[in-house]
Amino acid sequence: MLLESDQDIAALLTSTRRIALVGASAKPGRASNEIFRFLLEQGYDVVPVNPLLAGQFLHGVPVVASLEEIEGAIDMVDIFRNSAAAGDAVDEAIAAGAKSVWMQLGVINEAAAQRAIDARLKVVMDRCPKIEIPRLGLLKNAHGG
Image 1 (cartoon, rainbow, N blue to C red):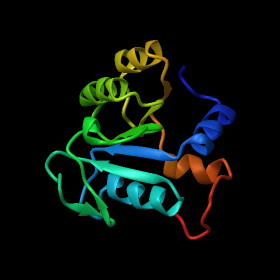
Image 2: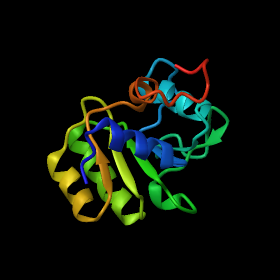
Image 3: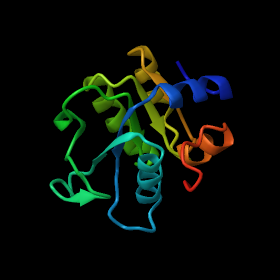
Image 4: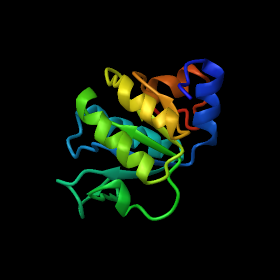
């Protein structure tokens, strides 16, 4: 199901506990690094995914190379890849049994979104949780963002 209403997006964000962040960056100025930190501050259990950084730590959390290395349930896969590469991340999310995929601002891959929907995943596309969480009144930490 493609989530577009505020109510559906808020419900997803409040029911999500564990997020795999695909395309995590060690560079502080990168959006994926800032949003990773923000999601941690909001109380989410975030697992950074980047094969080039596997074994390193970002914000105190060990980086894994792929979604298949994550033990346990994945509520959401937050995708920081370009639109074309997002398809592979969506396919990995489906294979890993994730409940939802979230494609970041500017990441639009209709075919991948449809594959996720067909596999009964919830899909958010072309949005950012760092924008949506405060906009929807879901901030858990007044110092976040």
